Figure 1: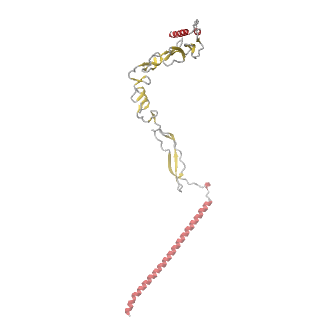
Figure 2: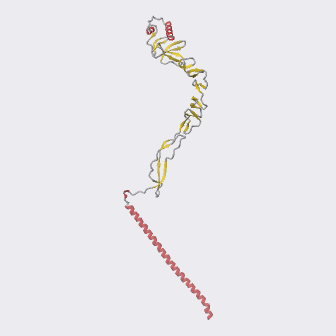
Figure 3: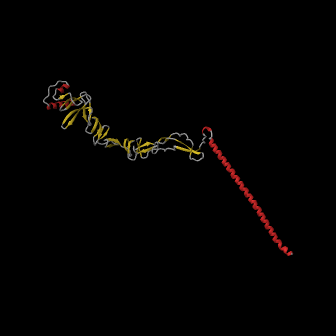
Length: 328
């Protein structure tokens, strides 16, 4: 009934501003066409019939009629959905936008608010000035929310936290100052995240034995390695050694083809002969020196013996001379 009255008022206002209204038939659309300034070829996409002064008079199916106020004047606008602060109602005659309750900023229908105006708080579809017991008001969301634990900033209920206060880390709806075992703090997300431990692959085969220096000994080293499959996180288990080295003996290399080099063999034989001759020459010289030394020693010994004999004989002569003098 209210919708019919609004349509009738719009038509009367239009007739008062125009040169006059012509008689109209009982059908709906011819009725608008018979009025001066009323047209069915409206430029606005959702209008079925419209007026130059009052805008849309009727809408196409599935569109909502909304009375838009411009100063002291209202014009009809056809919309696919109602604007903020209004909700849509459908009827066989027409679809209209109805204003929400005064305390509602937006609503689903006249009895269910979806957001409240400033100073009111939403609880179970109603906008209230105060919240029930065990609940506190949230000025940002304009809602009544459950009282959260002290370390929780935003919670679903008293046992499930969605965002923790500064200095705490969230894990499974709980707030922790120190993360549990096998978890570590993530300062970017402010959450406790699982620790990531190092993972390594299998050892490779031992490398060939390589001589560590250019010396003639056969001692060398061989090594093996393994790859890091998973890099650890900040507090995860670090990676073990990825390289191992151990001592080994270098295998002797055989001559190519299994044959010795004849020139090398000849050089080695000549060298051996020279060394042998040198050794024999040195031994011969040594024997000569020993013979000379033995001959010299015998001669010296004989000379010493002769000298001693002369000394003894001279001593005996001197001893016998006084006795001979006394006899004379």
